[in-house]
Amino acid sequence: MLSTKRKVAIGIIALTVVSALFAYFVKPHPPLLEMVSPQQELPDYKAHYPGDTSLANRLSKSFGLAMVLIQSPYTENNVIALEAIRSWGRDQFQKEPDFLHPVSLEYPNPRRHSFIEAFFYNLFTSPRYYLEEQIGNLISWRIADFHKTSEYASFRTSYFEIFGVDADAAALLARYQTEKGKTAVGVVLWSLMWLFATFTGLIYLITSPAKLRFERLQMVLAYMWLLLAPCYLARAYIENSVATLVSGVVSAFVGIYLRFPFIIKIEDRGALRVYRTTMNSKRVAFAAWLSYSLMAIQVLTWLKTESLIDPDPISLLISAITGNFVHDPIAEEKVIGRVIALIWVVMSAWAAREINRDAKAAFEAEEKLASLKGPAT
Image 1 (cartoon, rainbow, N blue to C red):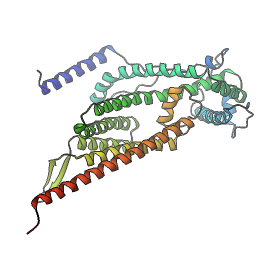
Image 2: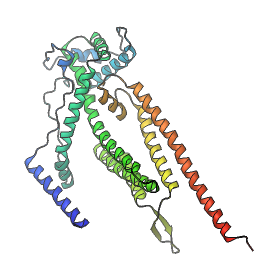
Image 3: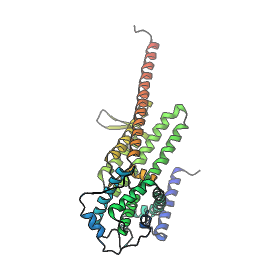
């Protein structure tokens, strides 16, 4: 049997060799995802040459969206979606007038200025691009499936009635869905990781004996927080966000505390000593309730602050599943919000019962101990 130190050494050597081989033989390229093509929107599409600004002028000079829509069950949703596309398209033309006809399709690839960046770049970038390409293909399939529905047919008819039946209008609609689909790729990857972690934790809990259930729940909570920490740290590195960095540090601290509970005591001479301790069922129940409450607050905040122009991760995940990146998934978000609230109520009742039962058990134990001592003399 190999010792733990030897296994760690072998793992480090293997990762270093793989990163070195990738650095020499592989040049990662981000996938050029075109989830929706203009031909899907306009079968007789013919690309315009750069310099045609007719659509840009129509969008930039429109301060309100006056429209006559064909009456359908989706009219209200179509109005919101058309206004979102108009605002998005106008902003894009102001930032980059030729964004519908880019000269180059290559994505900028920043240089890696430290050996840590270079090591992880070569180790993880190729697998990441491969996964992004597969998820992008899956989202493209869902979008194509949604395009066959009467809901999208109603929207498409209204769209071309407003913006005109021409190549640039088709390219704008395709680009809008493609860009939102690209934003959803990362959300789907993170969601799959958390879905796998959640199911693994649930199976670990369900298969545990009753007497070990709270110990295993404590273990699951600890590893969930420890998994959340690098996720926040990765986002902090990408977004250069101090708030996200602090969230990552706090998550790591909470995870370490749940995995190795400790208390800090001040000794007689003012010295601080750290002692290992254990968590009873009352504290584990409170930790589970608090963890779920924080997660629920985060999700509900996303749902309250999202918009079609700046969608939240929940909306993007719903859109990736349905293939509908033009309408706001209001109905689905309401269902998710109600389910989360219902689970929170059930979990609050469970935590209160566990805490109360633990308190009752302690009180009954004290009474039995007092009765064994007999009457005071």
